[in-house]
Image (cartoon, rainbow, N blue to C red):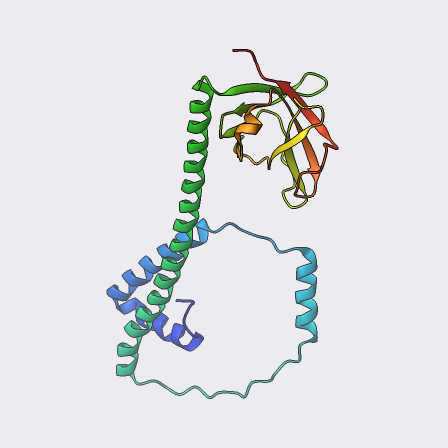
Length: 238
């Protein structure tokens, strides 16, 4: 009922005690609004935003409203108006429920799509690991800690992130280097996310390397040579 104007809400409250139909409509509407309120994540605005809001309120000139003289409403009009007002208020709540429900369904759809993508990556990693043509290199830090595994196929590759920390995707990038040549060659770039698997753009030339390294570089492109090598690994013998 709070979606009505104050005078309309007062009219409806006066009508409700004698109308069972309107009472049931109000009860159902309040159940919907309660469900909506419970499903919305609470958010506290920053203190500076509250301060700006209060400052704006304090310095906003107040307009003095012209007094309005209430006019009595005939009894018959009250009886006809209350159900109509209640239906209008319920319609407002229903529209809000539909809109909010659409947002929730959209969020759920995004989560399902993300899970499906992870499952597809995992399936690809399993198939690559079982392929005899796939080279496997365990990537270890200088101290011997296992940070990841590189699966190098003839035209595809994946990094299984065992302990690589997430990078800042706005100004950092991981680079895979081929280290079988006298000078390291940048083969691919990737970002570490929460999924634990990253697919790489690969080539047959990249697959020929038997020694690999990974570095974390500033910027979003691979430099001419690694500046911060984190791990390296040799392709395991068949």
